[in-house]
Length: 373
View 1 (cartoon, rainbow, N blue to C red):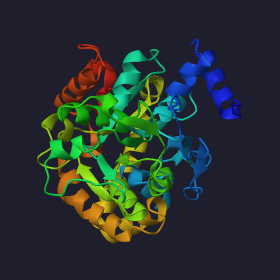
View 2 (cartoon, rainbow, N blue to C red):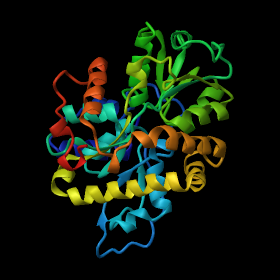
View 3 (cartoon, rainbow, N blue to C red):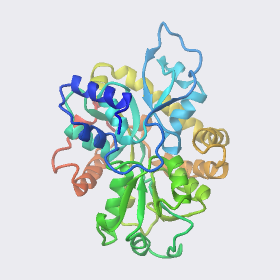
View 4 (cartoon, one colour):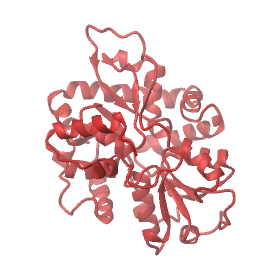
């Protein structure tokens, strides 16, 4: 396999930080260390200029985002020119192929901030280089967003079946995730264990984001797919002809799987330390988008459908706006501030995964003072 220019540049950036990285470790860190089916370009850029910005006063800030509800605040910021209102110059969003690659870009100074899987943020922080490691400046979603889609050809338990029976129906099956080591992969492992199974009871394949999962399900290259967002799980089921097999937020799901805060807001440690006012401007822009979702749900649903569901999931997007207002928004802190008890809970989940050692997460180190609840 020929090494892409992006891979070479990423490796050079990591080496410049003083890290000695092998090609194998770089690929694994980028989420490419396993079979990839139907993957598209590793990295792309999206988004038009976010309004007429005053170049003299705006601070350049590079944001990583991907389509979907966990990142809808980013899309709304672009649509409403919110960045310019807060003197930020964000001409485009960078689209990582997975959260794992997003952290690679963050620690190598290629981006400044992103919505992120909370557990991967913690693990990258613990194993990162001081100054360059990610820190948590907010929690966007104080619930689990994960679910599993079963293919149209599968013989799956009924909707009335319990969590354990549904998970056990995956035994021997090929299960797609965005990337090995990404949030969906870790959540799958935890869910399997809670159902009395082992990770090796299924064959896990990295297939990328939802847009890659749909053709892989339809072509029978995978039997199921772990959706990482509320709407993407339902959209993959709709477009593939399959069904939502497991909703991790269901009441019969074990608490350790169900009661999580899975979407955090990450910046580099040096950015939070040296430019806290810039980070707080970015948080304020996201707060504007949050309020827009509550005040203008129909308009927000259209933005979500147009940017994240290819114009084919308006009903799903509308349902999410109601879900956001009823379930997500009431649990959030102003400007997404981070409660210590939730950090401790997520650290316990990370310890269960083996990605975080007991006592390795320090709230004061992980969460800058301006972001603490």
